[in-house]
Length: 329
Image (cartoon, rainbow, N blue to C red; front, side, top):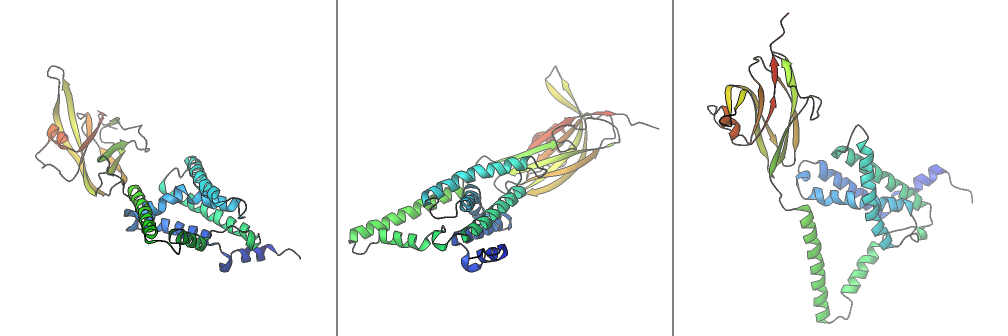
């Protein structure tokens, strides 16, 4: 019998009637995970963790095993299950390592795209390789047989009332244990509440801060805010110029000049981080400190100035600056 053309084998492999149910379920799970990650309402619910966690711990390894071992005699069910978890734990860090050396880096979008591409490729390879085997040699998950076996094991005909009650209690206990485990995973204990507040140099790194410049020249930094307060917070950022000195006799700081520069607000949801490019100009060489203040919902009145305003802030940062007199032509 002559060998069928490649195009015919491909079309036959991906005929809807020949699709493997387990691979279809995996593909639908990937789609559901994408929706729960990116759809605004779903990505704030427990469904995000519920669908995304198997995408890291199980799905990549399962599809890789399905592609490598398409026959049902290649591995038994326990081996496939164990290797699915083991290979997932190996594959995902390797993908992250590769991404670390690319311009995209280890971020949410590149990781999701890479996992989806890898999983889709393995699904296609697994489906094609299974189609090359005779139907009786292809691996498949016997869903009906599994359900029937569990039903027969737990509710075997001829059981006494006591045995049937014990079977029902066992099922309830298993369901409760699984539900409790899922709840613990998707609803973790609320941790410490805090807010990140940082400044970066114009290149986006914690270096090359503008600390020495002529008066009247425009300088730039990046202000970063990270919300880990377990709620939405509207922050207010203020920048002020100070002339501050230290009195060694009294061991106190003295502010002899104070000038507000700018302020802006930003609303961040829990676990959201935003970075804001910020440009500033210092026109008077007498100032030697640029102060960054972060307030949450409580912003003091405008008559609170100097060290009182700094102390009233939720977070504060500063740069010591040296402002040279403006260069005149």
